[in-house]
Image (cartoon, rainbow, N blue to C red):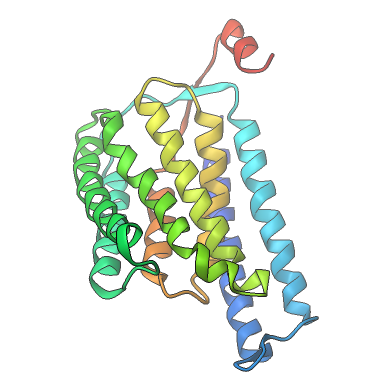
Length: 248
């Protein structure tokens, strides 16, 4: 896969996300009524729906194009370190300034996994900076944090009558959880370049769209930066036998 193609999808995801962020801010500025939430039928709602479909399609195409490639071998990466530290800082700031939506064990789990994920990201960034493959267990708390973050939001989301009020946060969070899962699978020895790259490309614009109206802006901004700065890159083409195993 050519370098130009590798850069196309991250840049397209970033542009889509910025356009979606602007469109969603304009929608709330033009069609938001505190008494009845978003007014139905505004043209920007259609624009946002199209951008979401483009984000999902872009992720699917990026994953499809990478399906016959192996991961590029681990090398020293300052960008990967920056991505890991950015998400770690975003997690720490969110935990210090925002209360969990749920009380009891779920709230404590949200905080505990958040701090553990931030610490693991710092260690992961150090591994990436030295060119070493991070141990599988370092990615597990990050994946579990996004899962418990979704569970913490469930009560709020389910009580909101308008899907577009929480759709972007939900999809962005799902994308980050799956991205962390596939990165963990890679560290465990699985070849899942197409899945991790496709999910990451789709997650970036969705996270940026979520920024327009959320109580966790730093969380989604940090997640998008983490994916963009540490997105897996395709390496050599797989041998024919490996292609057949992957694409029966």
